[in-house]
Amino acid sequence: MTITSSTNTSSMTQSMPSYADIQSIVADDFEVMDKQVFGSLNSKVQLVMSVSQHVINAGGKRMRPLITLLCARMFNDNPSEKAMHLAAITEMLHTATLVHDDVIDESGQRRGKPTANATWDNATAVLVGDYLIARAFNLLVGFQSLPLLQVFSDGTCDIAEGEVLQLQHQHNPAATEEDYLRIIDGKTSRLFMMATQGAAILQDKTEYMTALGDFGQHFGNAFQIIDDVLDYSGDSEVMGKNLGDDLAEGKPTLPTIKALELLKNSDTEGYEQLRIAVQTGKTPNAEQLIELVRRSGSLDYCKQRALEETKLAQQALSTLPDNRYRQGLHQLTELASARLV
Image 1: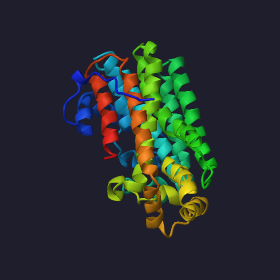
Image 2: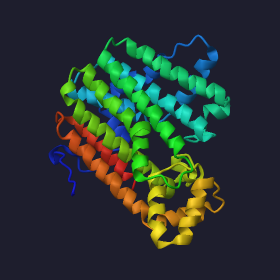
Image 3: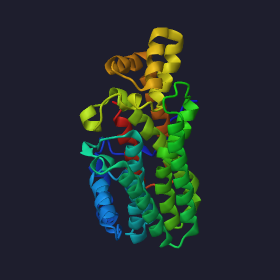
Image 4: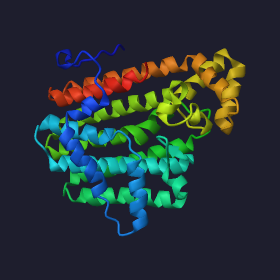
């Protein structure tokens, strides 16, 4: 099936905007939200505060809360304290998942800065991640909205299940593309869906829940596939990690899954080298293995899949109110895809 973009081209700018350009569309809201991410921490335990502030200070683009703010404004172009508060809660949940990821992956750095588990220890990092999740739900109760709690509680369960599925398939060379999609649907795409659908509930625009869910899921899928492609073709300094780290950790990512599938029939020796590397996590010949994945044709396939998911996300946007905030969401999808060039 050929997928074409259904975005209204008249609303598109001719040049690719930067992330800062998109963020500037909701600059005032974003500034308030960013302060609330810190301001919402109120633990009586100083260590909890220190570790929480450390991981939040590690930065990141705050893309998920930005999506919440854009969605809220798309439905009602007025400042919404509730939307800013929900956006901050979304970032708090995202931060918690990163803290737990770093423990699982035994990561010493994230975005070029020491992780919480490296700065303190695994037990402290896990418990502070737990606190951030608990605090997020403590704040969600304040909205007194059962539908909102339902979306976030269901979504948080899906995120945890996605992480467990990834762990289940770690070092599994028999993992399939279907397995991979189930993993990223939980661990990545679900939070994008929560960011969009939560805004619709707050603005009483639940008739758009399906379209927003589709956008969040497909954009999340595209975003994760792009990230996984860049593990074999990106700039390690920009990414804040070494190329091939996912392979060394035995993560079931689409580039590796597809490379194994392609090599099995075309390069038996190469297939065995890659299969053993996935199974054991031993990659002393990392550069050779990365080149093997590149030559297999896997990355071309993954790039096409990412572009297909991007187009589906853009098609979902086409049913939403057409204004500069929808345009900002569309530009986020374009900006993500541009990372593949």
